[in-house]
Length: 299
Image 1 (tube, rainbow, N blue to C red):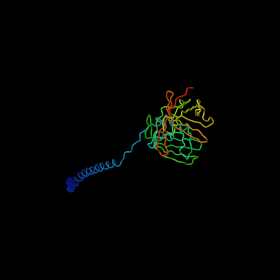
Image 2 (cartoon, one colour):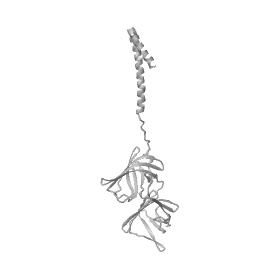
Image 3 (cartoon, rainbow, N blue to C red):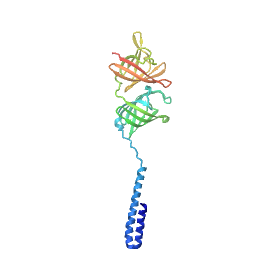
Image 4 (cartoon, rainbow, N blue to C red):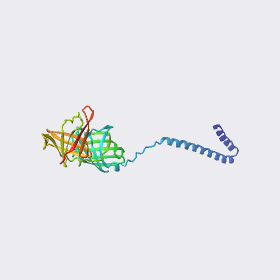
């Protein structure tokens, strides 16, 4: 086919030599057609090359975080592992720019113990990025920069970088994949009053075989009672005994013989019964679940 094509071009050239006037007209039309053919072919190949070079850039879906984040959320997992109860944090988002954070932490040696009872948090949302800035005390600043990867009615996940500074000096940072679960109830009012019960997880370090009694007061303090014969008496009326409830997270702190102690529980309350459960971690890294069951004492 190529041979015939070039023979046609040569024929056009011979026709041009026989008659200048005819050749001018014919060659002009012929070479114009040839040029058009070559240009069209070039355009086709260029178009194909362009399509191959242009990669498709995926567009992140708009998760409408400003709307869907409103509510109360608690840590459930970190890097795919269940979060032990003593490391759990609760965030309550009241608007797209404001939240409150609760956590009782004593596992970060560089920062010391933290008692965060609904600490105010500034929130900034830009697309699927959410930045949380809080000041647990007058010296510390915590910046949590998160990319939200999924959010629904009951949970959301994000990739977070958390940075701690004290008096403007960097202390530590960490990057984590966090999964939050939405808290559907808040027991801060239902917990008020006096409760009596015992550990129901036999064999755990909390199982002393004894009944226990706590009186939770509205000012954030509590009284722990012990039995004296047939009577219940306060264990130490002058000791530090504080608690807070945020959602279903119950945190205690108290001083015994000059040493501060802490406890963390996830609770449910219904029909005059209160149930505590907590995921604990042993020194060797293994975990176990501790449970308590209590009944409300009639006033």
